[in-house]
Length: 501
Ligand SMILES: Nc1ncnc2c1ncn2[C@@H]1O[C@H](COP(=O)(O)OP(=O)(O)O)[C@@H](O)[C@H]1O
Ligand SMILES: [Mg+2]
Image 1 (cartoon, rainbow, N blue to C red):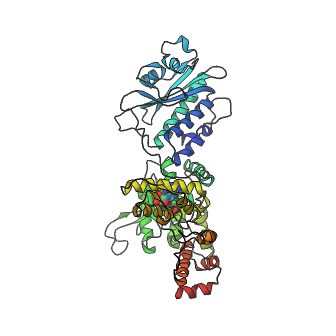
Image 2: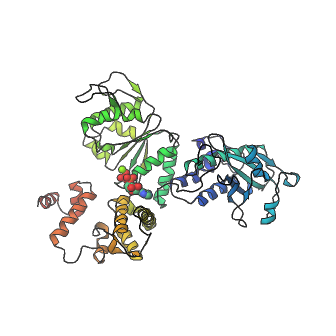
Image 3: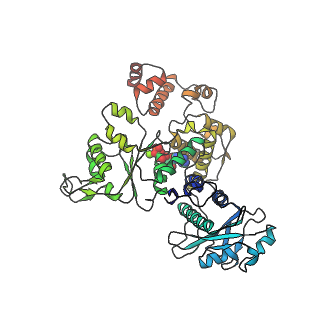
């Protein structure tokens, strides 16, 4: 990633290329409004250039005009400049940067904007924003250097920042409408990772840091926390984003097939292998291989994977030729790999090799009410669209109920809960009774017991309550009976007796 280049640009402030837009880039992983994102970028640019104001213009594909996307002009919500008009219009037309030490001496300067805003522009620096194909997509300009004058170094610095802005724009949905079009499509969602609790912000920062390298990443977190989304975010923000992202779910493949799934096989390698088949490792060449639930990888395949991670080399099943593939590996797991190592079911050397960088995705119950509310609203809007239902709001009581639940199934559970509420309820507000939440468990048992709308229905047979509670606890512990017994406060043998019954 370009922003990781270590040389400092310009003097003053000690800014390095990496620090100027880094905090802005972490915004790209979560949904932000475009105004928010662009404002944040221009703010950093203004700061870095020691300027009074800054403006980012983007070329409007429809009208062919430059449209100010962020102007530090509270007086005007939007400036439109025809191509060729004013300094920005000229920069867009010619593709050359312009430095005006004193605008009053320059015929290109268009005073119309100052007249409308009352701001006095003294000096100005404007550079083109180009996409990767070097096509001009907009103009980045700063006004009035606070100390001293804009110089050659400022021009270079602003050009570099314009590259970063362009880079940030390509990571968002602000893609060119088509190859032939000069303009950008300015609408559309950014991405779909919702939540800005401190835990998630830390995760975004770490995800960005990881994606700027080619390091092997292990994503840990309970089931349904969003590990798959994080893997995609890493790929999409990395230099490999134009290459493939190949997903292999280690749980769904029988042990006997996984090796050939990963590394491919030659014709005749085993019964039924009637032709040569390329493995996922080959398919992922130039991109990223995502090994989901790596804890389920059989020992034998673990050895081959280790070798691949060390040497990038492998052989197809039944093949003699040693092949090489340039692949970045990301893995995810929701199990305790350390325990698997102790049990002899996971290789320690592989474990160290896959967790060069470890990211942990927080369980929903630790992310706080604000994230739960945002996610719930995100899913309400999404499922209303999908099922063609009016978008409805959550009642205060429903929201409280959601916040009290401990979400053993994490975001996935919340997603399903909201989807079913959207489908089943016809009321204007979604109330607790529309939420098909199981009875409160664990830490919020007491809160749940006092809530009629959420608890077990009065009169439900004790035996059924017990069975339901045990099943849920077991699911919560991924079927681990000792852990479930511990949580339930009963002996392991008692639990297995109850299970038999
Ligand atoms: N932060 C989030 N914002 C929006 N949706 C999310 C978030 N985290 C998870 N999801 C959604 O929840 C579901 C489960 O996420 P997934 O990435 O498959 O979890 P995991 O891989 O950890 O089991 C998916 O439908 C995903 O889109
Ligand atoms: Mg997953």
